[in-house]
Length: 189
Image 1: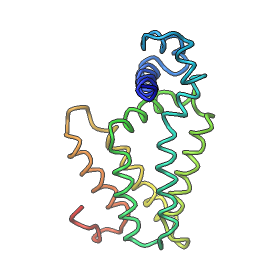
Image 2: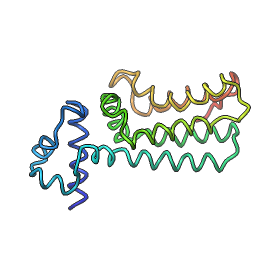
Image 3: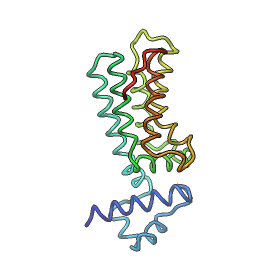
């Protein structure tokens, strides 16, 4: 029951933060939407920052696991392709997309949030690890953009224009093109 309430608080807060903005949403509004007292909400989360942390902690854990995996592998084209596949799987969930929308719409308010700073640091480290140390600047940028292409495809297309599977496949195709010079892109993804 406690986890159900906690999950419900997260869902309501995420929706309100996205619709109204982080700064414009109060804990009182979240409690009212949930149908509980503010004191009951405080049992689970003392502050809005605590709710944000709970929403993005899983993403931080996923990035840290991915980074650990990358550091255990040689920097090869095969590792890069596998990294893109793993990263694509991690950003594919509806939950991730909802949190991404929330973060995108509240960038200014959350710019200095400690967990989000750690996520940015892990992403920078991940994009550093994707290339060989002697890679050219253009190769480094291209390899890094392969990861960001997996996000961009979800934002660039109009809702309902393509299915989630079509978007996923297109994002992977673009990401693989960015990983390798022309002519060496694998054809089965």
